[in-house]
Length: 494
Ligand code: HEM
Image (tube, rainbow, N blue to C red; front, side, top):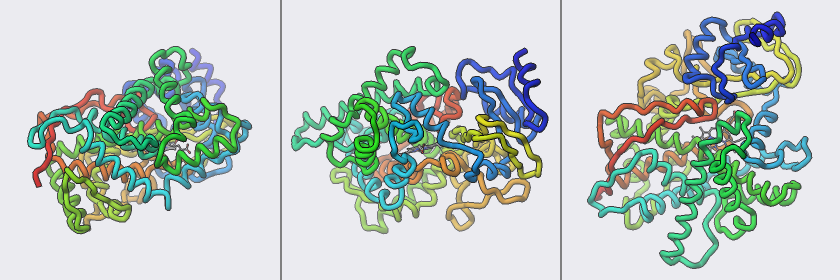
């Protein structure tokens, strides 16, 4: 009955209200076991835009990709900052990063662009490549003799290697001359401990975004605080090779903010989470789909082999010094398509903007809708990614879907004969587009290149079914599988 009243309070000219029966269970982003089906059925009934009341807030779902531009271009009526600043403070427990609240004058957006893109990329990529090789080859991953097969879960394998390499790339290594095996093992234990804390905290992340207080989650809470402790400035300052991103953030925390030491550390936990929470499942899906598809595996192997041969690099696991520059990584269209296709099938990030004032939203079909101040406008990219008119057989994995007839990146996708401007959005859109997206794709390419060069890989069960997506995280990025899938690997003999 509350939906009846809500309906009455909405005005003519506003999008149709679809609330009332949403299976809202205290989680703002959990709109049912299958959000895509839910939104599709509402779209069929109500058209290009409709409204749901979620967690007390009116959310207008915009479903027509030709109208996305009206929201994505930075209009004066729409705010993207508020939602992000609020969400981050809620989940990570730091004081507000919004300069208008008075705790800092840092322009976070600028910090990200400056340290994750352009001139900052080559050194990030170089460090990541070194760390990936030491993680995958020189440490605990290889337990058996070189010629023996080892079995692991693909998910567990990707998490171990990518988390450790990514963590060391952003936060550096301990500044300690001691290179003994014992010391190195202690360093490794620290990172593996961080991975366990990260996973524990990540589990409760959807609930925190939905507004539940962290105190109700004992282990998730202590996991977050453990992560923060290791990222206190006094600990970070003892590390060498800290990335530009973290060094600059430390400097700006110290000079432009009034945060206490714990709050500063929690802002670094936020960066850690942003850098890993999507990358790790994206790496899983990329490797999983690739191993499962012989044609993809063959094409990827050939591309990687050619890249190393052309730059006269020898694959030698006992002396792993492979280098892949930004130019080389940008010139691997097959791996690019393999990564894009895996993310098309697994991403579910909700793109949101908040109305700064009452205004009229003009859609592509010339209809206009009244939007009220503080209402949220949301775009859900899976509606695009699984649209059969954009992607033929959208449920089928096609590793070369993003390649054109010349074997280069395909950039033209149509719907009803019209060219689409937005057809692939796992990294968000417009001003809120992920600032780490170039690094993310490069690090996954590096990971694949190394795995393919050093290891023979195969599924334990070649007919294994695709694990379902864990929809409890829908809205928050790349979804995880509900269970792991076993594979086996062994060093290639070159
Ligand atoms: C924000 C996706 C990897 C750093 C975001 C957003 C998405 C996203 C959807 C939010 C955009 C929005 O709200 O509209 C992804 C995916 C990744 C990935 C799919 C991997 C496959 C990374 C990496 C880094 C990173 C590796 C850093 C090293 C960030 C940061 C933000 C962000 C700092 C917040 C930006 C802001 O609020 O201004 N990412 N991301 N991301 N991402 Fe990524």
